[in-house]
Length: 171
Image 1 (tube, one colour):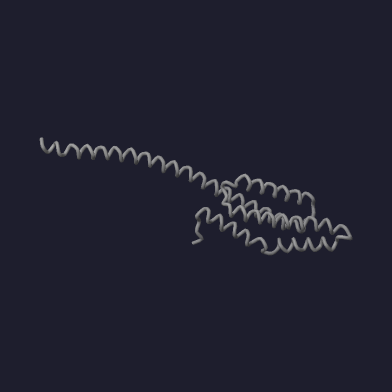
Image 2 (cartoon, rainbow, N blue to C red; image 1 turned 90 degrees about the horizontal axis):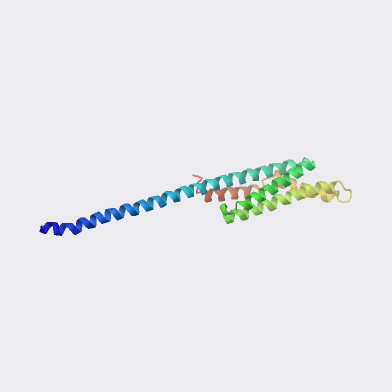
């Protein structure tokens, strides 16, 4: 009887600890699973946003480069629509995009817009005899930016920032 009196508190403590451990473990497991699911969803969403951003950037660059030699109003209207779509897309998805990446995107948009304006206005000015030389110089400046690697450093910075945000190593 004496042994039972000594062992009983220990057994009660062990059983209590096992029950407490099971309850806490169950709550923690549920919390971890919930976190994994929500994180995986956000991570997937960010990947899709970054993928779409890159697609839009390269599409705008391609169309701007093509516009240097094409003079149709439809082409310029299409590029304007692409700009608007791109700006709307990145504005809507700002919560998923790192702040430093947003700043780089703003710089890229500004540079693309300058090229578009120089190209478009340069072609308009070329039609007028008085502004022909100014139009040619604007057009040449836009063409040189688009046909060289002027935008490559910004695009590479954007890609590197995306890789950092997604924890993707180059190794």
